[in-house]
Structures are given as structure tokens and as C-alpha cells.
Image (cartoon, rainbow, N blue to C red):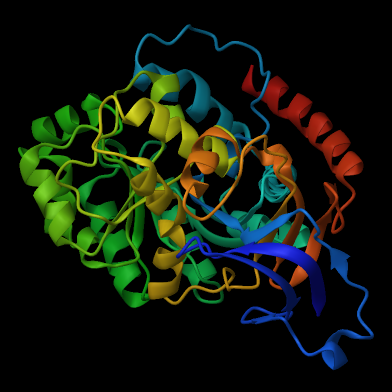
Length: 420
């Protein structure tokens, strides 16, 4: 049990403020007990939260931990001039060079960055085409070592040949036998009909869903029309990929009105990744016609969901139908996705404590203004995951951060050398 004393509770759904003490129960289904009987807490050393705010921790709807060792890497052999070349000369060059040691360190540093930003649950989309076997379990263990809940998938693709696609399917099937997860696909333009069918069949058999990049760039739609004479969402719908409430469609930038109506009528979820889209110059997200099942991710750019929400709002209100309440709803929608699909790792005992010094009053009525224009990841002082304290006063308690960062720098050097 963790005892939080003298804090201000912010209900993440109603935005009700409440001065209270909270007893936090440990475990994957742990509960919160407000203003507990003193007899229950007299032998517990509490955390003084005076002047601080306590609320539900954050979660990331679309991440790429495999990119964690890319920061500062040498320039590619050719300067990319479009999205296809960004993939070819940067990301596909990187993922081909990954080995198990690099994957483990990528998972550890991603998980560390997440929790220090208040994120305790991550939906991750992994790729390592020449180190597939066991890669998802390596990532799962790395996330759990730090204390991060997860929903993983392997990015199955035909781009490196059908043998590697089959290895991706096998890795996914093996992982789903013992872990919660999704059936990952790269994107329509690198996935043939046979692989797509096998992925959907696996999702049915494993009671899972598909996690795929959709129309991130116009070239994805153009390829689909050229090869199949239909658009991407039409192809996915025909293959059965939209039938699952667990399916996640990342990006969805270049859909036409008919595709948007297919998404809206389906139980599938859309994940918005504004900063990645800006970085790759692929276009701007708009929710028009997509329905309400939209959440936020970072697409491997970073692990700060507050920043992701703020960026999505600042760019999005020029292109999207969005206001303060809508961006906060998208920020928190991932909890509903996790809950309705029965995934574990994101119970109510996942919390952040914010030490937010504000020059203006913060109340339930103006919370959203502070959320967009005030809150920063640096305000996160304590993080509780599954009822366990994993960050205290900004310091990780579960792992040795300095040792892991030193190991990561060594693995990054190995990775960059292989990429040459």
C-alpha cells in the first residue's frame, strides 16, 4: 500500500478537484481508497502531497521503441526527398541493423523516458526484420523491468521477403499464446494479400486486433489503387481488419470521405501522431468523418504525451475540428480503449503526482487551459504503476538509469556502425 497525504485529487474523467488523502492498493487491479480510516494507515509511511496534484497517469497509443537509439545518428547515405525515401534510407536501414541487445536497450530507455514523463502504459509497434524471434518478449521484459504496462506487436511486412513476413507472423502467434498483444502490420503498400489474410486470421484466432499504419503518406493510397484498384481502408475492410474493437489505425491522413465513413462505422480506433506527421511533411490530421474513437500517440518521436497533446492542439486547430475538451478527450481515450478491450496494466492505481507551480488559480473549471498552456513533463515528480512507486522526486526506483543510459550509448554506437 502507498499512502498519499494532503494532496489535491483531479478526477481524470469529471475534472472534479478534491482535497484528500488516498490509500493506493498494489496489484494489476488495485483500487484507490479516499480519506481512509486512520487505523489503516497508521503504520504506513506516507508521501506528503501538500501543494501537489494527483491524477491518473498517462498512456501512449502508438510508439516505436525500436527507434530509441536513433537520436543523433549519422546522416543517411542519401538525403531523403520524400516519405518513401525517409523509410528506405533511415528507418528501414535502422531496423535491419537491430539485434537482441539493441532491442533490449531500446525498450529500457523508452520505458524510462515514458515513466519520467508520467506514462505508465505503452502501445508499441516493433520492427527488427533480421532479429525477429523472441523480440517481443525481450521488449515486454524490458518494459516490465522499468514498470511500464504494454500492448506490443511486431510489424509484419513483405518488404524484406515472404520468409521474413512468415517469421513475423510466427513471432506474433508465439507471443500471443502467453501475452496480451496485437497483430502488427507495417502498411498496406508493404503487405501483400496473402500476408494480410494470414494476419487477420491470426487476429481472429487469438482474439486480438490489427495495428497498422494507414495512409500516412499519399503514396500508400496510390500504391493500393495501382495494385488493387481500391483504397487502403476499403482493402482493410474487405480483408476483415476493421471488424475488431482492438484494431488500431495509425495516422489516417489521406482518407477520402468513403474511407472515413467505413472507419466511423467500424469498432476500430484511430491514433493521431501530429509531430511525426509534421516531421515527415506528410500532411495534417483531421478528424472529419472518422467518429469519436481517436486517441493520441508519438510514433517514436519521443515519450511525452503532454507534449503530444499540446502539439496536436496547436497544429490541429488550424486544420481540424478541435477545442480544449476534444484534445483532452483524445488524450484520455486510450484508457477507454484499454478498458473496453479487457487489457491489463492500466488500472486506476496508475497515478502521477504533479508539482505544478502556477501563477494563476487552477480549478476544475479552468483545468483544460492549464493542461494545454501550463502543464509540462517536468511537473511530474512521482509516478505510481500498478500501485507501486516507480518514480520518486524525479528519480527512477526500479532500474539504474545511469548504467542503462551508458549501455544504451554503447549499443547505439554498434547500431550506427552496422547501419553504415
